[in-house]
Length: 232
Image 1: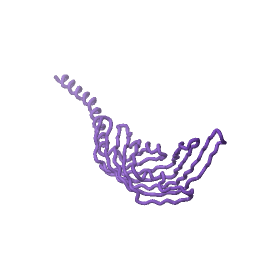
Image 2: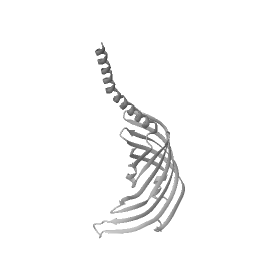
Image 3: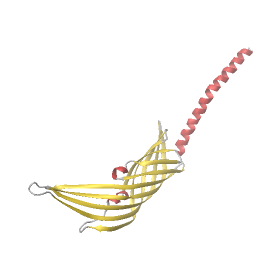
Image 4: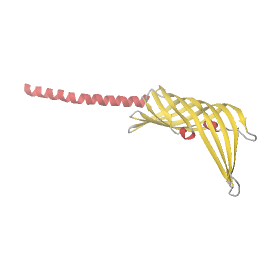
């Protein structure tokens, strides 16, 4: 009988040795999921993937202030070239090129409206308020080309304007962050801004050229973005 009890005790001890590490591992995973679900992460870094299409390259640093709020800082370097071609001149065409160089910086506060979990992803929905300052140095030029078989080819070059623009705006954003279990996240957002201060300095202006609306103003209105990043 004593030998039988000893065997039972050894069996129980052996099962405990096998089960306890598994339970601890499950608890650790559950704790990690709970931490991700409630606070996501104290620090996140991402790059702006969508704005690069229009010549703005930058990224974001996100800090979790509380379980329901985040502070975000966005910096973009602006370096774009926009061409417009008017081929309605018969044997000629007009090519207008605008160059933008500058930067924008934008602090933002985001409030988390809610979270939901789907398989290996956590969705975090937010509303944000931001301030943005932007400085753009813009040059615009045009080239007129005529290629007529009955006369020598003709071309004409003009510098249309050179201007320096600074402006600031306030706005709101709405979006969603999608977090994976592998410390990877995607942020999709859209919003609207309103200019509160603008200054345009004309360094050169060709006769008859209007520069009331610079291409650099595009970020002071409707804004949309796609960011890809990691969290720690």
